[in-house]
Image 1 (cartoon, one colour):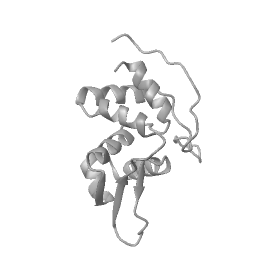
Image 2: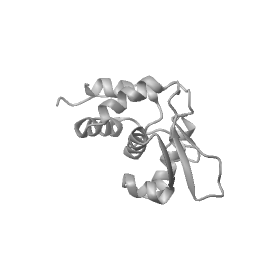
Image 3: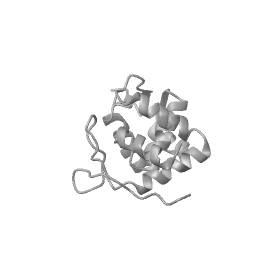
Length: 142
């Protein structure tokens, strides 16, 4: 898949903004039902806990991941949402990112994307279902 095609998929998905978002999505693609505490999940994907919590919120808000509603237990059940409206695009992206070279290509494409806005002046993902604003980016010849 070309860098432009990867960028187009990311534009259609609209909610992924960093490598942690991608790596969590890949983790849940491989483990579609996982009962974990957040600290263990952070260890598994290799990111610090605040970044993992932010990326989890991103994936849940986008409808790509569901979390059990039991807030009193430290471990949560996470379930990858298979029926998401973004499902086909996400599946295509994950098939590319499954392999090392594909993951690196997706991370490179994420780095080239303009930052997304968050409430409070911090970078954020758009609201689920929102259409991304088309933009052009130059991709260096590889």
